[in-house]
Image (tube, rainbow, N blue to C red):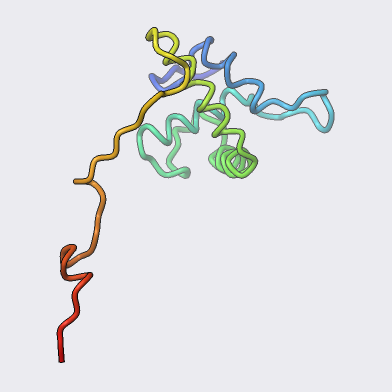
Length: 126
C-alpha cells in the first residue's frame, strides 16, 4: 500500500473475510490493474465520510474505477455478502451469535401520511 492510511481502511482480519467476495477465482481473465483492497478502502472512505465519488482523495484509485467496481459488485450481490460476513465476524468478536435473533421496529420512525393517520383514512361527506 503506497498511500497513507485512513481510519476507514479495512484491517487485515476484515480484508481476509471480504477477499473471497471481490477477487476472481481461478485466475481467469485479464489481471486486475488496481488492488481490490484499495478499491474497497476507497468505497469505505466515501460511504463513511459521505463524500462524492469524484471527491475521493487523490491517493485512492481513480474515482471512476472505484465507482465502477461499486456498481458491479453491488449489482452482483458481492457487497451484500461481504457485509453479512463482516457483521457475523464483528458479532462473534463481541461474544454474540453471528446472526441476530430479534429485531426492533420503532413506530415513531415509520411515516404514515403528511396530514396524520386519521386524515388519510377519512373522507369528507358531501
